[in-house]
Image (cartoon, rainbow, N blue to C red; front, side, top):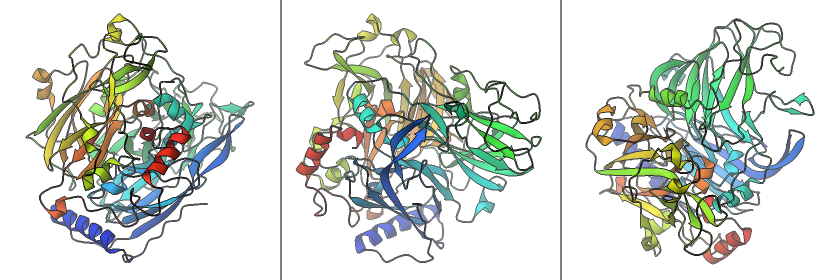
Length: 639
């Protein structure tokens, strides 16, 4: 069953609360941008979430998907449109859908985070998300905000300019193609999510994918898996909308014999940047132009994950590849594996049936990612926002791992089964409070339970050499820093506050990078660096003129990144690492943005038919809580 978009020229009739909310959002946008109202459409999709069997690597696996597809259906809209997505949950899991990077201006109710912004959609229940797409254009994506299930529940969300492709700030492409990098799992993903949240680690995917296909580096009984094939015409320009939907890995993407011109990232235009390799972490999107200017033939498109070098734990991570094939080149159906392997660069055009393979960065080459992100700057564009110069609040957030005792207050640390390993910010791991009302609803109605929240600390409880590689292995130095705690960490910001956050990666039990994602807002990436952040010298490096604007910022391996954002979108917004294992282990917090002084700067009430704890059509809170407990999966994971 395919998702069917419907476009109409006039607005549909709505209930009064929904119409009032939409009108308020429209007025705010037009007043703030000076834009004149233009004809818009309502785009409708139906998402049927169900389980189907898919066969790869000689094994049938039961996977949870939307409309029987992997990846799921793409949502394509024009800036200014409204979107209605009717989610019909025929899976055995509680589900929410998050619209990753969509600002949700005055519409936090539709952000799709279980028990943060809404009750989850229970099995055999339905829910409709209504989104207003204003002030954004480019490549975003949607995914389940359910631990690990986003590996199979995801798809592209493409916003085109209201004046058409001719208004792109780059040459109009011949075609636009989503390229979704993902992973293939042969495990029960919901169970893996529960296990990770409870300290049982070491679960890994079986393969990597491009647009759901494993490619010819993988085989079933000697027969190569199908790979993604992009057919191109000589001389034409193609816009690749690249999305990393993987759970665990940042990827390098290359096409043999071709270069990319990066023109956007996270639905924000960038100064055109030419490179032969893209670096893209989970949660990120990159728009890149590719000109089909190589000799006619076949060229491998290779996606290779990177990971931190030793002494970091080395995990199974898989390279995959598809094909770029010229329309007049020799094609005999299935892709064939190059006898030279995926690591060799062809010395010119293709030879016979052997496609050209690119030379890829080393698995442990993380500096290529550092320079790729550091070379991107914002394009001066009509939608460009000014960087806040004056800062109202500053946070220094140290990202790392830690542990709590499985039983009691005292236990043996280090390499022992007496502890549960957690991911932390400023030495605290996020957990949802013992309440059955979503935080957004409790915040809006000022109900009980908000008093149990703990303020996210401005800084870590102690200073140390955050990036000391000696902290990565278990040992006496690491064990002194390992003890941590769990809490529902929130940070409140007055409306309009300019906030600066320094994200500092650490070496505590790992030296990973951290793709940090903030819901409801974009962030200005002012600077990044390796080692420990030092304000006395690093502030001078801040780019306050044209910094990259992102919703997901990669904090480098054993390094730091500084961002600023304006807290002007009232609501309760999740902020977390987009590595799924870090999120399930608690590397998250909630940012609460208060209402402004006027109605048009305040969060409207929940829309009609919203899933609230008092809604007659839903289970009462106690029943909902007991059902979730019975399923054995925690609220933080959203199932």
